Amino acid sequence: MATHRLYYDDSYLQEFDARLLRCIAAEPLQTASGTVGVWEVVLEQSAFYPNSGGQPNDLGSIAGAKVLDVRDAGEEIAHIVDRQLAEGNVHGSIDWARRFDHMQQHTGQHLLSAVFHERYGLPTVSFHLGEELCTIDLRGPEPTAEVLEGAQRAANEIVFQDRAVNVRYGTLEELSAQGVRKEVEREGILRAIEIESADLQPCGGTHVKSTGQIGLILVRRCTKIRQDWRVEFACGGRASRFAGNDFQLLRRIGEHLSCAPEQAVAAIDNAAAERDANFKGLRVALQQLAEARARLAIAENPIAASGSRIIAQLLSEENPELLLFLATELAKNEHTVALVVHGGTGQMVFAQHASAGENLQGLLRALLAVVPGKGGGTQDFVRAKLADPARAAEALEKVRSLLDE
Image 1 (cartoon, rainbow, N blue to C red):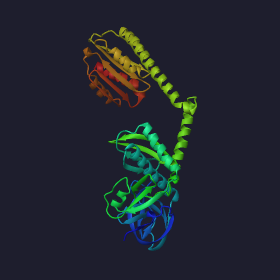
Image 2: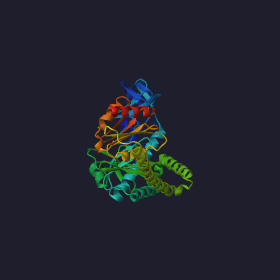
Image 3: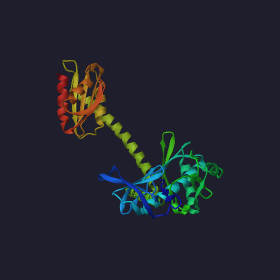
Image 4: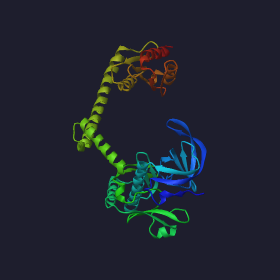
């Protein structure tokens, strides 16, 4: 027996009475607190909206039992509850705050999608109503910042006009003649949501009665998703919370940068420019330091009788970035193998002049078999990091002994 869906004609119905047709044990449900036993309840009629069409299901209670999930089971609606119920008449109650929030988001999506389609030629191919943000996937060229702002402004103008939102029924042919935005492949009588002089869209979801009840529509950002563009947005109470949180975040950023909130972007740009300049200056200084230390090390370590020169250095207080500069500079000298390790971070860089003839890749594997860490490279150059930086001196001594062998 098909469940009569009360929300089709009255999305504002918060409580209802119905005859319980069936209550059977269902597959246990995974919840945040663990696995719980549940029952599947089917009613003669229901105001509970099932998870469908991008809109999450309602929650609430039936005869005192907590409704944990609502599923669309073809002609029936399956209510998943936390206790067994006896057949007979029962009273259902909808979690109204959750329902109205979903109504705001879903109607706002219809309006925003209509604006993107009609004004900018960007049809919506997918919709998701999340716990925090909602998304629509648009097909077409990338929406610019001006397009996103323009769509938000146009949608909110219609919100402020408080246009009527109506439920329409008709065949596909009848709705097509009225300018339906998206055709569906279903036959028979279809349900559609009409936003006065703005949109007509087939939909089985719950919606507000007028655009003013959507509240503020806030477009957050746009990202590339495969061949489409995903636009994040929020409506009503959610939009208000996001806008407030965004301003508080911007205010705190301004405080950290010692500027007014509206000057934060310019201050961040200045800070980034200073950081880049300092980074370039640091690299120049490290290169100069590496050259000086390499000259000193080469002078203090002549080529041994074996025909090679091994220079092992353990750094501690120096910037870890010096390892790469120093090892590279040392390896410019013939017959030289440079083993540079940082005691504070456990980072290691081994490099050699091609004339040295060692296999540093094999040397690193042998070392890491004794002193755990991760790394890799080539015969002439390897980089690695010890699992325990405290073993840096041990690692340097061990790799030196492996070379001597």
